[in-house]
Amino acid sequence: DAQSLFALLENSVVPLFYEREVSGVPERWIAMIKRSMQTLIPRFNTERMLVEYYHNLYLPTARREHELYGEAFRMARELADWKRKIPMRFSSLRLLDLSIEGIRGDTILVERPLEVSIRIDPGKLEPKEIFAELVIGRKDGGGFAEPPDYVPLKQEGKESKDGILTFSVSYTVRKNGTYAYGIRVLPFHPHLAAKQETGLVYWG
View (cartoon, rainbow, N blue to C red):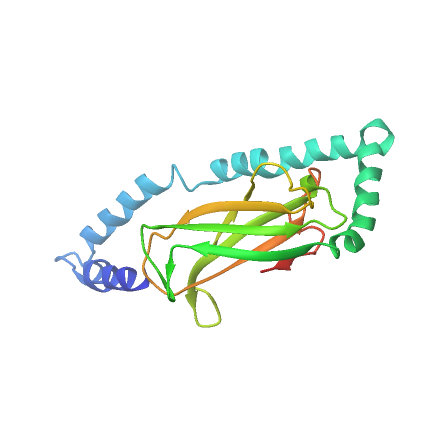
């Protein structure tokens, strides 16, 4: 993307700026700028931004506030009590094993699905309090080259007789490159503002 952007600037945009007729005005460059404004302004403008803020941030926040503070703060008290007890309960969880099919040696095949499966001993947690997801993305040095994908795992059926839970997901890599991936397990409550609000995570 960076190389494409620099090539566009060097070969198209900058030469147009210095291409000046008798008047000394870069007319083709100005025409390009006007065309950009015509196509971009309807999408990138303050009105659209405010509408998105309203629907994606302000309205959900107001609704959550009403839910938390309704019925004499019942839900807020329940959530606070859950958050107070969850660290000790979450520490009893164990990730027993992790299975990934579709990797040959250290190679992930593009356009071939990875079948990811984990088995969890929930300890003192209820199955509904467990959220597991695959975190995967192209690697660049010590971190991700771009924001990774966060792919939720789904629980398979009911827990076994010994209480063990199985979660799985299928994921397909679309681009070549070096990848980093892992499984993370977090405590879940339907009224958390964000899935990482508790600060607790179990990596595998």
